[in-house]
Amino acid sequence: MMIVRAPRVNASAVAVLLLIPAWAFSVVAGPTADSPVNAARPTANGRWPGVISTGMRSSNLDRSIRFYTEGLGMVVLGKIVSGPVKEVIFGFQGKPEQAGLMVFQTQGADESSPVEHGNSDTKVVLGVADVTAVAARLAAAGYPAGDIQQHGSYRIVIAHDPDGYKYEIVEMPVAAKAH
Image (tube, rainbow, N blue to C red; front, side, top):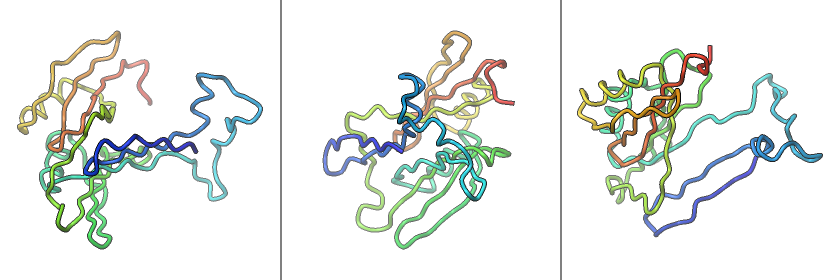
């Protein structure tokens, strides 16, 4: 696993940590003698390696829960409290094999401080069956979304959660959708 860290913009900026499997780079560069292309196989317990979740700090957890459930139509898969940290894990109904989104808030002095993104242009890309329906759902819940754009056979809309995290919501063509 290769770890890539985004540079800190300022002391209050949230550092982004991306975990990118090294074998992903072999798609572009082609496999080499030492590339772990064959590393993506079940572990001893029969599970496949993969991304479990990504975590994002929230300045208001209740407001975030409303955005993800009412705006994006996700469900709460779990809640975890670990000391001063409260985490809520979201996913799509009936998709337990997919990675979830974790939104967390740390209780204390900076509990409700705004999330600062600095010069980051990080985004989360979500695949949906009907981007028009998601855009309408966001608008009905009071969250503005951009105009739906056509990029080849993909339809895309951009939205931001209450803390300013960017979401690219993509409707894939039928032939490209997983069955």
